[in-house]
Image 1 (tube, rainbow, N blue to C red):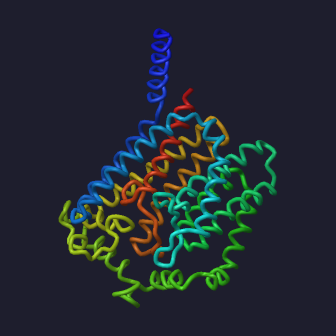
Image 2 (image 1 turned 180 degrees about the horizontal axis):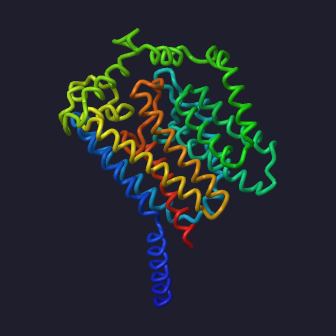
Image 3 (image 1 turned 135 degrees about the vertical axis):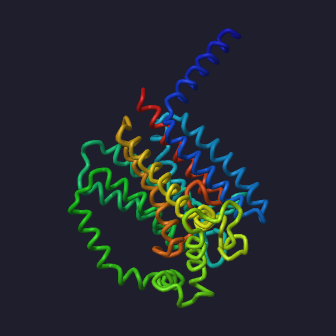
Length: 370
């Protein structure tokens, strides 16, 4: 019996080493660079909030552990849990609508011993579900399947909009639509949907909450209310602009340290980075994010199965959308919404989801080399 356990242990060790050796090293290096840059920036922005720095260390460790565990999970297992994850996520959204915790007029959290935000889980559960649906359909996909996929996407998005949470609903929608697009939807249908969206903008405007309309008006002219609704954007732009070419230096950002930048450890951490490291640092950071997205699409292109290709492509879109929306809102080209900068902003749930996304990409990259 002892010899049998030793033999199994040796086989497991060899399998684990073989699996790790097939990971995409470039993807790991890019993520490590972003996490390091994020922690350095957060340390500067939040040195007066030491508990946040301690919490972020814990968040990074948890996300890294989740990434490693998921990277060892075979993709066929991830395929099997796609439908249960989607159903559980929808049930949690329903429970949130019924008995959720309301904070500042938004019912986005559910207390299950610890407070969780089910909408964050749907950023990954929705593309998993849609990739599974198209994978099950195989080569028999028709135009009706695309409408069925849209219906599956609309269900959780409707729950999230009801909370209300416009930022998360946009991210979930884009992640889901990316799977539908990669599944081979006709460009004529894409154009028709785009035209329908443009024509429905007046209706969407009337359905939006007052604070959402105010954010769009503030985007168009933040000086209308410089000490109120426009304060966030104006202070972020001042911080980025004051960084100049090479920045003021680490821990030397005056806008951040004098408390002019709101939410400087989370949503507006890019403003702190831009002030301290300047145009050169910001350009290098954006280039790193572009490399992350490009590597995700590279892994998707060489994925061994249809499910893996669709899911990896959707994860690449998730990385791009997070980055574009966050930097866009901090730079004043998009409305202010609660979207973190990937691997840099303070936060537990978002970083955990991003870690799981990276683990899935590592699993796909390992299996593509089998």
